[in-house]
Amino acid sequence: MGDEQNPLLPIANVGRIMKQILPPSAKVSKEAKETMQECVTEFISFLTSEASDKCRKESRKTIYGDDICRALGAVGLDNYAEAIVRYYINIG
Amino acid sequence: MRQAGTYSGILSGGISGKTGPHLLPLARIKKIMKKSGEDVKMISGESPIVFSKACELFIKELTQRSWMVTMQGKRRTLNKEDVASAVMVTDLFDFLVNLVSESGHSGEAPPPLELDTFTSS
Image (cartoon, rainbow over all chains, first blue to last red; front, side, top):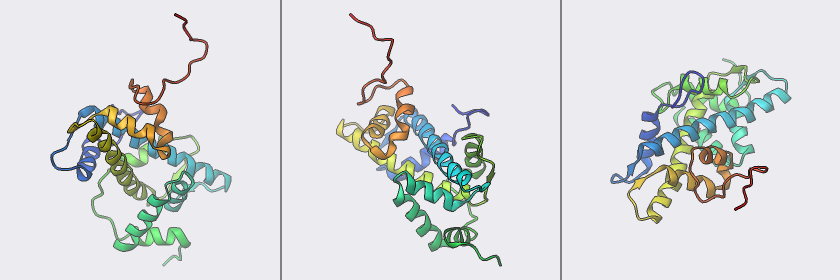
């Protein structure tokens, strides 16, 4: 589980998002939610490192939203970056 | 009003309108970002918001892929081995391979190589 040293995203929120994409009759084991919690936390760490590396090379101190979008592109998740930009343009 | 640069202009312009509840707690996202490395110093206000959406997309994609494994096994309960299998067969999720192997699950992938601990029968 998460603690101060290794924070995780809350399992309730993670579970809720999982349920959004699954059929109503689907069940999810507690261990599966825990695994997903760890995976998405690692996802954040991994991408933050990518973004932070780039900022350091460019002598910038602050990680901005577009650094994260560029990091998504750098690891092959361009479709996420595009979806994020579309989402925020549409509701902005 | 400040003239923003291309990408950040789009994002911060759009995000400032979206202050409503997010699916994931922004403070927790920020904490995880800070813990990810010593290099991480300053994080802009919209970064956790961007991550909130990225994480939602990620969870949905990994869940969908995991569910496909569940269905292949003709089950209705998604278990952690299904998540591990989905990670193993998806190149884009290579960064998670060690994580799902560490959790004690063998999945579809071979166990990690441990040279010098080879035992002969």
